Image (tube, rainbow, N blue to C red; front, side, top):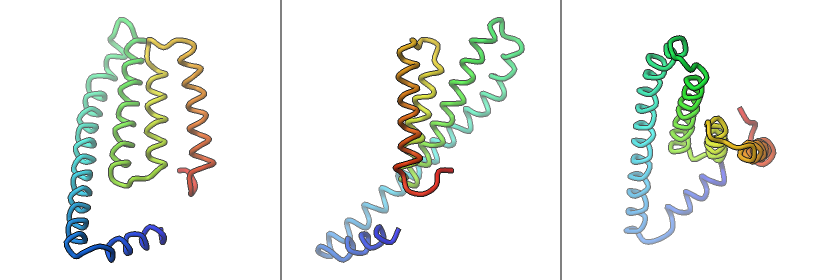
Amino acid sequence: MAVESQTMENATKEGTPLERYVNSHVGNFIHMFLSVLAVLVMVAACIALFQIVHYGFPQLWHAPNEYQTLHQLLQSILLLAIAGELALLLLFHRASAAVEVVMFVIARRMVATDVTAFDLLMGSIALAAMLAVRFYFLPGKPK
């Protein structure tokens, strides 16, 4: 954190006054833009969550093919998890959030109905690699 704040202080001291002014305002605009995108992603995720709870779960008891319905439900839930992690990534720019987004994408792909045994093997290896990256190479304790 201290290194990052020193870098920001050095960046604001370098360049002409016009460059500093433009850098400051462009940086603020980009931060606001990403914040608005994160809010829109979360609003869409909340709407999708309502639809899953209201329409998806009751189908488990009334559908002729409960297995297919459960598959769709799991894919929808993992898509919501991806949306939440993506919103965190847009707001905080953490490496751990990027790794978690990739992990959820891999998990969602493994839940799909058209996966082969090779896809499952490669997905398992990729998940294991992402877990190793998360636990051994990212700073701080994983939550």
